[in-house]
Length: 248
Length: 72
Image (cartoon, rainbow over all chains, first blue to last red; front, side, top):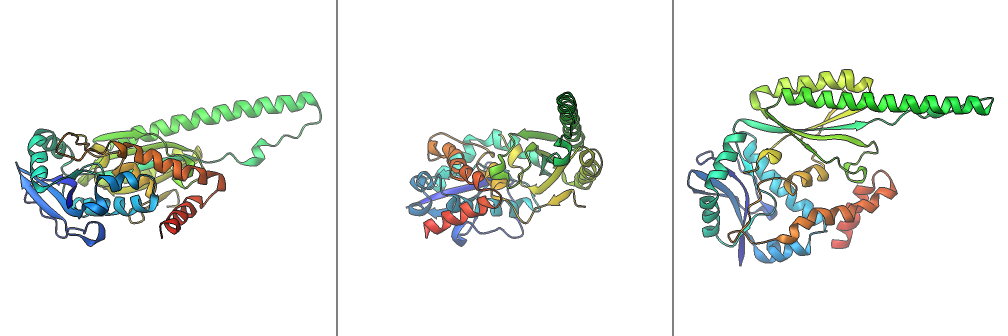
């Protein structure tokens, strides 16, 4: 028994120079129909079937391996060409089912493909730098002094937060202007982001290949200027296959 | 430039899962094996990793290492 694992959909005839291997080194094939090509691997059902996904739903090591394969295959296509990523996992019972999928979704997939053609995704995360501890210290002779200083600190903190909010918004607007589309996702939990600083923006931008340099220049300007001044740290990831912009 | 760290080759698990599970075209119906439970995958993973927060920095790596250790 095998399942057909579908990574994504690309234009037919856009054979990538080298297609990465699927999980366990398995071959990736292109199944073409209706002016579309699906990147597919035939995988053993006892290792990658429906039940296995359920069984490993909370197994980071298993998911990481599969997510890495999924991404590696899509990235190998997106490296030079266009691709609409499908959500992991998209499993079909047979090759015929893959053809049916292409047939049934032909309009949506063509539309999604047109939307991402010649474009890549860049991820930008902004983090709020912790406030220096010395700013929080209070040295007061009297209770009145103490209260006054604490209130002043509270006001300063509010102002700082508001300024930071403006900087984050302006940064996102500047990046959006340098992109053709933008998506703001929920911030990642510090437990998962790997950083102690709270995430204040978790965004993805769809950028035409010919404007990538310009997009990065905009980000660098923001990072070195307003963001640094307001204590906002910038992290750029990418280029990604257009995961955030492939809604068919 | 120090403000900008580019991590294209060194993809973080969370960024990867955010994208490959959280995003991408969702195709349902009879053609695709129905995996209703997989929507819960991400939540499940969060549940696995979130307690690591208490342990401080490096805890995610530790949690993953533990998970791998358990799997062996």
